[in-house]
Image 1 (cartoon, rainbow, N blue to C red):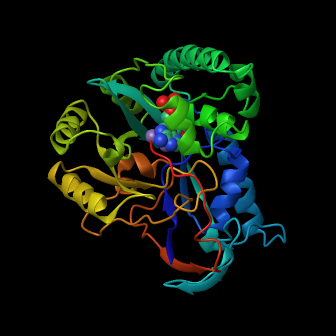
Image 2 (image 1 turned 45 degrees about the horizontal axis):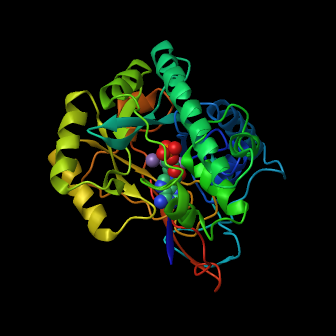
Image 3 (image 1 turned 90 degrees about the horizontal axis):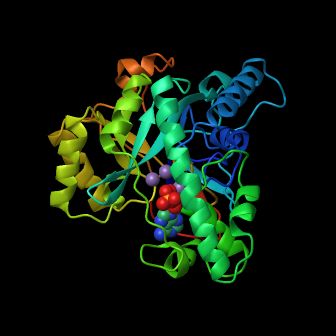
Length: 350
Ligand code: AMP
Ligand code: MN
Ligand code: MN
Ligand code: MN
């Protein structure tokens, strides 16, 4: 059984290392019953405008009762729904409208660790944010070129150019893009294997980078009117003591949000994050971190917040984007036909 939430505040498009265009991600969001989706590409906002426009177009089709309006099917690659609990797939068009939240996932370096700070409900044209993004972009291009050179020396050809060609125009190229490239070239058995063989820390195509500080990221997000959220806190390879230290530092520089729920997260990790969220008095966020077809990590999948936490959409920042502060999460339990849930796909990390 899979639980799918109607709110998902973390995903990627071809504007960074996602496999699908902003329009395709939005279409998938309707088909999976989402009402709120934040687009949070790495160090770039190039996918936001297209996603917002596509949601406006499809909402209009729903309101007009147009035959081309999106449907709620929950079809996964290779498997159709055979059972539905705790909800129905027969919601009215008005219940199926989607709000796209403009967001970002900023790479930072905190005490030698790469930490991801998501920004939600941001003005993507804000000058302070744009300034930080242009700095991050310089770092990203330099690093992506250096990774490409290393791969070329390891027997690939024109890695950087070919990686860019596969991504969207002006996309932030991450190791995720390279992992897919290596896999598609047949040089790795899976995305995970591409990290183990080439891209992971200490591997032959690894290039160390110094990103901006968490304070710079939080400051830019706040300047852009948004809420800074510590992304997937349990995915960093740091001790509990260091994670608490990170929470303290993040809060001290103005971080307000904490990503309590992630798609591919163990129950014990989730419980620990709920506890930290309460202890540090953060607003709770949730996000799949969807990148591509992956049975463990799809839009809305396995995302739930305990009622005791205050969700980020109750903040004044969210209201500027028309979110209802009393919005309730809807969680549908789905059973898929045999085959889909066990299909072998990549597992990924950050
Ligand atoms: P970068 O910011 O360039 O270091 O790349 C980070 C991205 O690479 C993450 O957002 C993930 O999409 C992907 N990634 C990192 N580690 C792994 C892993 N072990 N397996 C698969 N994908 C990974
Ligand atoms: Mn990524
Ligand atoms: Mn992400
Ligand atoms: Mn991340």
